[in-house]
Image 1 (cartoon, rainbow, N blue to C red):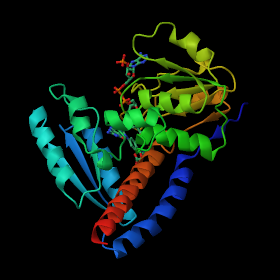
Image 2 (cartoon, helix red, strand yellow; image 1 turned 30 degrees about the vertical axis):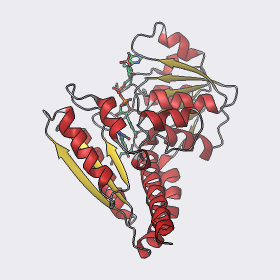
Image 3 (tube, rainbow, N blue to C red; image 1 turned 90 degrees about the horizontal axis):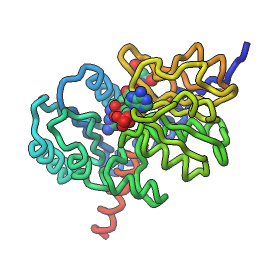
Length: 287
Ligand SMILES: NC(=O)C1=CN([C@@H]2O[C@H](COP(=O)(O)OP(=O)(O)OC[C@H]3O[C@@H](n4cnc5c(N)ncnc54)[C@H](OP(=O)(O)O)[C@@H]3O)[C@@H](O)[C@H]2O)C=CC1
Ligand SMILES: Nc1nc(=O)c2c([nH]1)NC[C@@H]1CN(c3ccc(C(=O)N[C@@H](CCC(=O)O)C(=O)O)cc3)C=[N+]21
C-alpha cells in the first residue's frame, strides 16, 4: 500500500511558536505586549470556536487578545465604527475580522477599513496587492501557512501544476498568487468550473479550499500528487476524502493537525511583527 508523507502542521506550528515566545517576552520587557483583536459578526458556533482558539494561542505565548462579538444584524456602518476604534487604539497591534460575515455587510469595505499596519491577516486590498506583487505586507494567514508547510517539507513547486479549489479572498485567491510567485503553473477553480475532476487529475499539487466536507475524491487525484487540505468543516472534517486520497498521494496534510495550527502560528507571528514595528516607530519619535 502507498504510504504518503504526512505533513504534520503541529510540528511546523510548534517550531514557529517556540521562537515567538522569546520575542514576545523581550517586547513585553520593553513595555509593548503584542495584542490581537478579533471581531466576529453573528453567532456561527464554529466561528466562535476559531476565535476562541486564536485567543488561547495568544495567551500561551504571552500575548494579549481582545474578542469582539457583534450581533448577526450588525450593519456595515456599525462594523466600520468598531474597526476604526481598533485602528486608533495604540494597544492593539493586529485586527482580524472573521470571514465570512453576514450577507448585509459589505465585507470588502470592512476588510479595507483595517489599517495596513494592523492587517495581520492580510485581507485588505492593499495587503493582497502587495502580496501578489511580492511587496512588503503581512501575508494572508492560511495561504501563508500552506506555503510554510510546503517549505518545511521541502516540496518543490517550481514548474509544477498546482490546482487551487476555491477563490475566497482569504484563501483560494491569495494562495494562487503565492504559488504563482513560486513559479508554479496555477489553475484557479471555483463553483462554476466545469470538469473539475479532470483538471485535478492533471495537477501535481492540489490545494483544497472549498468548505465542503470530503469534497475531493481519491480517484480524482493523479498518482503521487501532493495534497494540501485547508478545509475545516463542522466536526473537524477537511475538504478531501482523507483515506482515499492518502492512497493516491505522495504527501498529504491531515485534518486536524495540518494547515489549521500553522494558520494560527502565522497569525501570531504577524501580530508580533506588527508590535515590533510599532515599538520601533515609538522609539524613533522619542529619540
Ligand atoms: N485552516 C484554516 O486556517 C482555514 C480554513 N478555512 C476552511 O477552508 C474552507 C474554505 O474556506 P473559505 O475560503 O473561507 O470559504 P468560502 O465559502 O468563502 O469559499 C469557498 C470557495 O469554494 C468554491 N466552491 C464552492 N463549491 C465548489 C465546487 N463545487 N467546486 C469548486 N469550487 C467550489 C466557491 O466558489 P465561488 O467563488 O464560485 O462561490 C468559493 O470560491 C472552509 O472549510 C473553511 O473552514 C478557511 C480559512 C482558514
Ligand atoms: N479572516 C479570517 N481569517 C482566518 O484565518 C479564518 C477566518 N477568517 N474564518 C474562519 C477560518 C477558519 N480558520 C481556522 C484556523 C485554525 C484552525 C485550527 O487550528 N484547527 C485545528 C483544530 C484544533 C481543534 O479543533 O482543537 C487543526 O486543524 O488541527 C481551524 C480553522 C481560520 N479562519
